[in-house]
Picture 1 (cartoon, one colour):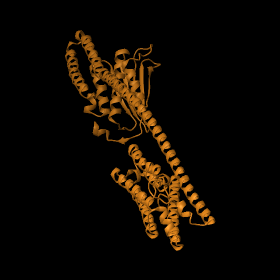
Picture 2 (cartoon, helix red, strand yellow):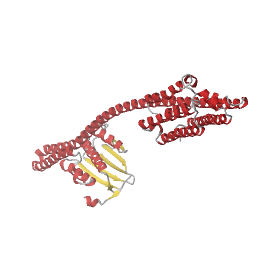
Picture 3 (cartoon, rainbow, N blue to C red):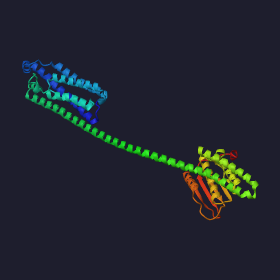
Picture 4 (tube, rainbow, N blue to C red):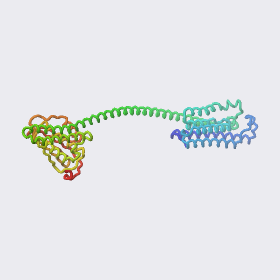
Length: 451
């Protein structure tokens, strides 16, 4: 029935039981004494001392019991309504009802048990929400408790205290009744004090917990604010890194496409200059090839700007594209480029195909521009766990290869693909470039269908 925690609820239940026992004791003493006075023909003595006719014992007992159980019923109703969560208007109605029922009880027992007001106070403490409203509702029963003093009021109104009723008993009976009354009154007051102490302790603990939660919330909000700031800074850095990465990628793509075509055209023009005096008839054919290569380079540059994917790969798969690349270089220069496939080919992702195409392109360009090679061998090897590409030439001996822009980006991309890249000079002369990329997925395809 009670909404408090277990210790406070037990104390309050005991307090209600003791309060009821005290009220029952006072009511029974008054009723029994009234009947006893009538039996001993001392009614005139009782009436003359209180200056009014006492309430009938049965009526007194019935009214006080009904009024008390109505207070218990309001407690049960408020517990069902959710304790402090009940509506303010409904709670105010119940609080006023409790106070009126307590005043009815006090009237019928001639203010002999003011502890009934403690029950009204505990109900207000438990069920009233809002500090201001709670203080107002607590002030009414506390003020009545101070005003409704039998000794103070009896000077203006004829009241007959419980002690006056006990005077009609002999010494032994009066001693036992006084002892029981004092025990019940003391127990009622002690339980009320313990209940209030526990309520105050609970309130202080809740206040402390709220402060701790507020402090934790403030700390969390500060951490969140810092995290948001860091996240914004990270987003800006990430955006800058993305722009830098995109610029590097664009630079690499331009280097791979334009650089390759310019190298091929340079070789074609040099061949024409060499042939113009010795074999003028052959110059026209070479110029036509250079012109065709120039047109393709322009188309490839436009395509690179649009989607940055090798033009050859847009028309063919990797192997035919590399075969065309080798034939193209051989046709416009005196350098002979060969290409071979090792192992059983399987389909690669578009990302890997583009990477391998750029690697072969870069290797051929380096061999032609820096190595003065007359022969270049390219190969693409497939194995169960890797794909490897190799470019070797017979260029000039001596000197270490220069790690330029193209090789740097190839090495960076190889690292991103968890691969291994090796390059350098060959013992017999020339340059080599080997790149191996681990491969976990294989899809066999018909190479002839792609040719």
